[in-house]
Length: 172
Image (tube, rainbow, N blue to C red; front, top):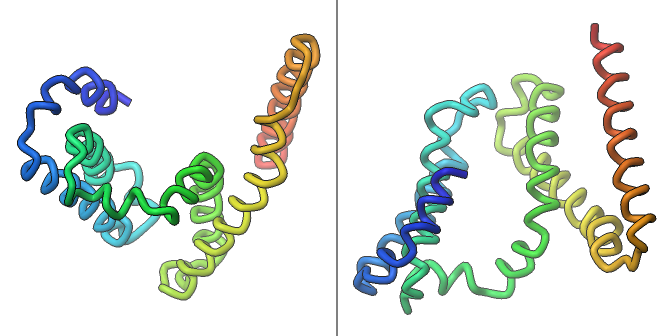
């Protein structure tokens, strides 16, 4: 979050970047993110110092993208496919880590093979699509009174605390 805040605060400086430099910055940032997807050899590498690679990559894309370079990574990231993925990014954010970690642990050594990685990505994608369609979108468009909204929030907090308490009691 601190890197994101620094990029936001540095936005006036980012606007001064030459377009060519900004374009290279965005592609370098995208390459860092793609690299990090393949560089971590174990779920136990995360979160180590390697986390700086995708974080700094994302910061580079945002910083360079402020100038909106014509040949920057925005030419790829601005396509309808990435727009579709971006709208579902919160659901994907919520699902990808539990699916990957639990799935990899469940699958043992086979969990680090490419077929297993693609299977886990497909499971995370299916859960993402379903939760976006049946939970996130209806919740976002729901017309609730203030009282209903507060009651639903309190109910969800109680539900989460109950589930976590149960998991803690079962595991100890």
